[in-house]
Length: 170
Ligand SMILES: [Zn+2]
Image (tube, rainbow, N blue to C red):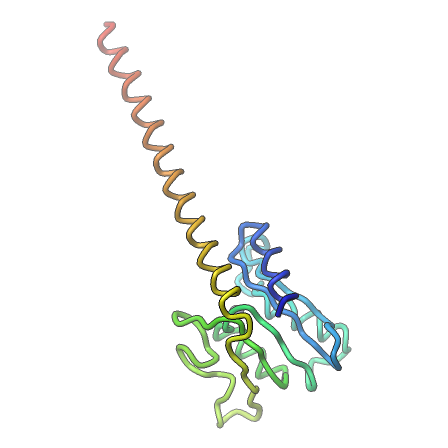
């Protein structure tokens, strides 16, 4: 999970929502991924899908049997679907995502009995660190937006003042 957090920081450095993951096979990290949705301008560019792509390339197989994913945030419906499809053994989750998580929060796509594969779930590994990383990111983002709004307002007022000074000079 520590390495998944390191991956999340790479996303953060690109001003992306900090989400990262790794895939482990036979005790070794075989793939890493981080959120690059804005950078790649692609809704498919979630950390998990980026790592699944790399792991499959490394193993030369679309099946990720025997693998475990460590991910800082509960996977969404798209990534949970891909994880079931990949036949991965287990997903270890940092913090849950009550608004969009599909490993138990909104729904549990990883363990639907009707599907031919269910994924083992472990929750709450370095939970505090994973969740603080996200809340700090969103806090900074809100502050930045507030500052930008204030700067735009100041600029507008300046222009308006200049305008009225010109009017007064006439
Ligand atoms: Zn996702």
